Length: 210
Image 1: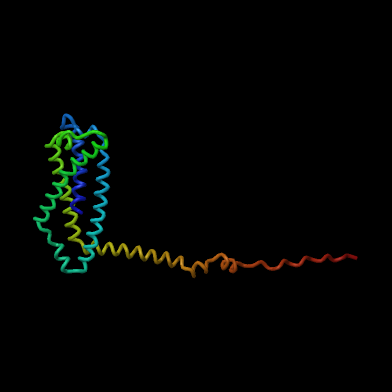
Image 2 (image 1 turned 180 degrees about the vertical axis):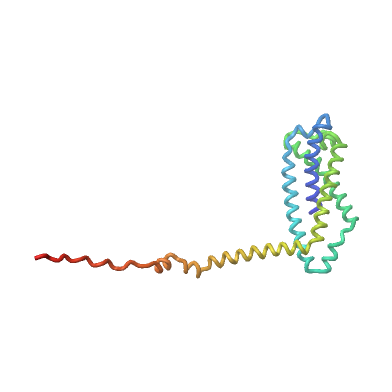
């Protein structure tokens, strides 16, 4: 799932980069003739998959913090596994970029005449840009994963501390709004505490003068 999300991000980045570079390096940029609604769609899908992957990775970090065996296993990132993941990401990006352009063309009511048009009008520009974006995004994801694995105890501890602060705030708020407090501060009780007015002073009786 993380590999597919990274490939989607690389493909969207490559699609935008090809569109920008094609205005200067390609005589007939095929990306200029249609609207590119697929970029938003694929970006949303990539972010959704990335969020699910992040939650799964965090749960694994929580388990690893309490398991020495899992912690030692997660520390070892083999170069062969990283290279294989990067190759898969690059291959998927090379497939997704022309698929995005084909989808945009079909939505616009036109067709993609050649594979070169699916890459912006130039195979060299399209493939090289896609591979570059795939390498950049792969490096970002690998660096992020390595940092999380290296500082996993600190990340987990920080997260639980944040949860503890939030829970304490919720408890304090609940205590402020406890039924006893509400009753003690009710308007009826406060009214009883207020000083009451005494009976009116008797009126002075007129004294007749003889």
